Image (cartoon, rainbow, N blue to C red; front, side):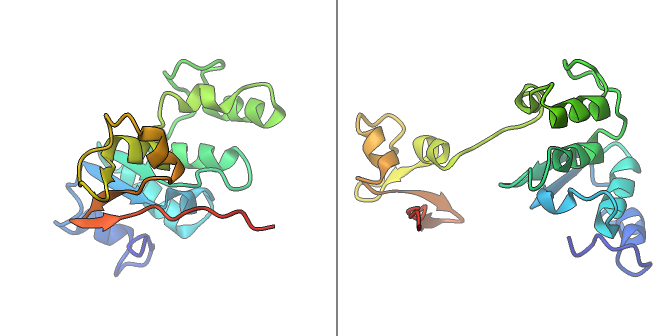
Length: 172
């Protein structure tokens, strides 16, 4: 995010002219929900960078929608810069589709199922979790529900370190 400035020293010029960045064909954007507002400097710099070549991108966020479905629309527009789409949606115009979502006439998951990969805590634990006592995979354990409910402890390896999901506590 720090590189997404439009000044000559660090922004778009750096991304497009610096050998380290200009020939990249894949862009990974973490915390992409910060790019839900198309009027920001960061948005405009990333939009121009992605448009300046054949770049693939992957956006990561735990909060794609903050205020409205248009938050997601604006993120999609960074990598799908035209409104007309080949995605199997009706109408095949993203702007019209999102306007219909806002009115309740279309279902957002019908679109997102074609571009989104969702991984919940339970999914990650189920497929990547290791038992905290035996260090064995819990993926095929007959006790999988005990791990998912927290009755048994499991961790995932991140950077070679054991990481545990925190227990959620609802406060009233």
